[in-house]
Structure formats: C-alpha cells, structure tokens
Length: 534
Image (cartoon, rainbow, N blue to C red):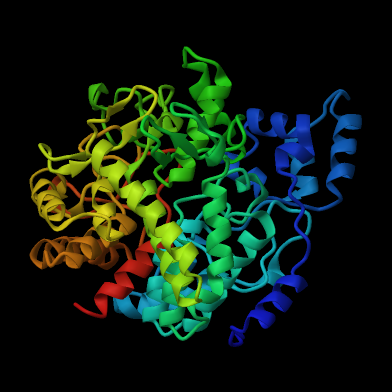
C-alpha cells in the first residue's frame, strides 16, 4: 500500500476520484423482492442479502422478479442466487498457525482485514471510499465508525501509520460527502451515525505523522452541526433528531435514526420485536435503530425498565424481549461525554488557527454541557454517572460501563473519578475485566460479556486521574482473557465472557442477534496496543 499524501489538496483530489455514491438502500431498490427475500429466510442472516453484489442492474433484477414471481413453480431461492453474489466470509483466515505469538498473529491479520477501493462491487450497498481501510471481520466486511478508532490504536502500534492516515481521510471524506459519518460504509447505514469519535481519530492521525489535527477542523465542525441540527429552534421539553432541549435551557444529545422501518440488515428480528410491542411499530423500529447507532446493540440499558427485567440464561440469544427499547427517550452519558470532547477539541483547534471567538463559543458550549451532565447524570450517592430519561424527567438507575466515559473524555472532576473507581471495583469489575452492565439478559451488551472499547476507555480514563492500580488491574484481567482464548482457539473474537465459567476457562462472549464473530478489529487494536507495554 502506498503512503498517503496528507496535504489538503491531495486529500481533496483523492476524494474527487472516488466513484459517486448511490445512496439507495437494498429495500429502496428491490422493494417487494427485498421483503420476499428477508421474510422468506433465503439467507440465515438478513445481513447477507443486503451485502450481496447484484449481477445485473438492480432495476432489471426487480423487473425480472415482477415478471417471474407469479408464475407456477417460481423458485425464489434460485432466482436470488442467479442474480446476486453473496458475500464471501473466510473464517479460516482469522485462525493462526499453532505456536504463533499473539502480537505476531495480530500484525499478520491487518492485511487480511484491509480492503481496497478497487475491490468495491458495483451497484452493491457498499459506499465507495477513496482510500484503503480495515474492517472488523466475520460478517462485518465494511468499515464501521467507532470500531475503527479502537482498531487504529493497534494499527499505530504495529507501525501501520499509513493505514491510520488513510482511514482518517476516509472518515473526513464521508463527512464531506454525506454531512456525517454513517454507522458503516453501507447505504443502509446512512440514516444514522455511531458514537462521534472523529476527534479522537484526528489526534491519533497527527500523532502518527499524518495531517495536523487542525486540518480536519472543517469536518469536525460539520460533524458537530449534524449532531446539533435543529437545536436553535427547540423550546424546553422538545427534541429534534439528535438534540433534546431541557428545562433551564440545557441542550443534550440522544441517539436517533432518520428512518422508522425495520433495520434492513436485521429485518426479521425487528419485525418480530415490533410484533411483541404494545405501541406503534414505527416507534419500536426507530428505537431499535437508535440503539444500533449507540454501538450498544442491544442491552437492558435501553429498556424502559432495565432493572426489573428478568435475568434469563445469558447464553440464549433473544431470551429478553427488546420491544420496550426506548433509546430515543434517553440522553446517554457516553454520547454526551463524546460531544463534550468534540466541543473542547473544536475550541482548542479554533484558537490554534486564530479564531478566538469560535474557540470561546465552543468552550462555553462544552461548559454548559458539563454543568447539565453534573446536574442530571451524576449521582453522588451511587458514585456513578447514569443516563437521563428526558421524557420522564428522571435519572435512570441502570449502572453501565458508560460511567467511565466522562473520565475518558476529561469531563469528570477528580472527586468524581475517585468515586467512579470505587463503584467500578464493587459493582462492575469482573474476573475478565470491566463488565458492561449488572444485568444478565441474553443480549450481547450485558453480562457476562466484555468489550475491548469499554476496557480501553476505562483504563485510559482511570489513568487520566492517576488511578493506576485499578487501570492496571482491568488491563491485565482483559489481556489474560484474550490470551487464554487465543491459546486455546488460535483467534481473537468480537467480545468475551468475563465471568467465572465451568472449569475456570475463559471464553468468547455470546447472546445477541448473530453468532460470535472472529477477526476482530477492535479486539486486535486494543490488545496490540496494550501488549506493547505489558
């Protein structure tokens, strides 16, 4: 892979050379054919169909279906496999030769997980990008937003600075092209984003010898505008897209999706969930999509009554109904902590470029957000941050690992950090690292699962405040879990079970809508970074 020219004019030229994006989703394009395929279970995984590459013009495929589907003996399965090429997933590519050290295995995985723009199939749901990028692995064969930052940590540690530069420029391109970073570079992800971590990426890119962070200031401003769209028109108690206006004039953010239909990549699951609900299906779909934007899809954290949920066998996928998911009713701790960091980054870079007025304005925004979060989300008695239910005007009581995010982004005070550390030790510290929530639900963002990004934010956050003993403890527990599974199975996985298991063996995580995935981008990134210092 050639080095990336980081000059603004070179970036603009590369972006201009990217093929124009066709933003039609598979549901838009294939209409009744899409519904027939997804409802008919032609593929075990709904994501497989929306990732297929059409073998002809989509309009021609739909026309052929309309002509043929009413004929006696029409075979939908044969029709689909005649007109579409399913994605190819080679799981053996993620398994190492026995005896290969973990660091060497991760370094060897980067080329396996790297995708080049020239390989984008025409007319598929994949959004073209100007530069190479790294995918998570398994069924996730596209670039994801917040996943990528944690992956890039490992790329930097592995000496792959050119990929860090390339991926940062890809995200800048997405913002320039669509006004925001989609959940992933697929058309069916365009209606939502993911946790806004572009500010973290540009800092990492600069530290790796790429463009200076202030060169990405236009994209940072545009991302902030996306998340704050409509804020100036809101009155207290109102919400619009990602923004909620609270009593007293405070503005906070929520997760949102511009569509209120079943997620195309999880169509059958969403239709089944909505059928269990006692409210309009469109509301359920919007809340499920918003939870997907959070990256925590799914968790009791988003349920209307998270602490009153049953605690079924966490190994049973779907054992907890998601029909009461109420994501859009909540102002989440982590999202608002990331927005605080984005505002502080814009303030600093604005001052660096001589725009002190804009710097002061964004410092004021950040300060106001911090005051609102302290008032609405901080619970001194519990020693933790909690999401705020703006519709019911009350603080939530579901403790989650999101409580460490204000430490990670520098929003918390020293006394708050010390209190969070004590709470984490007592309630979220598991044998294998930092637990996601206190609930065991069968959903993947609950116990017993642990996730690499949460471990990274917790360790970094505690280190920011000199709480190094707890930081080291979490890091070592996590690395031991990853190493144990690697030594037994020769691979890294998306998530890990952190609780004591039969025979005391560490294991990959379970639950959720799909089987455990190998690869795996952010596990590789965080593990590679920490192994260099262990």
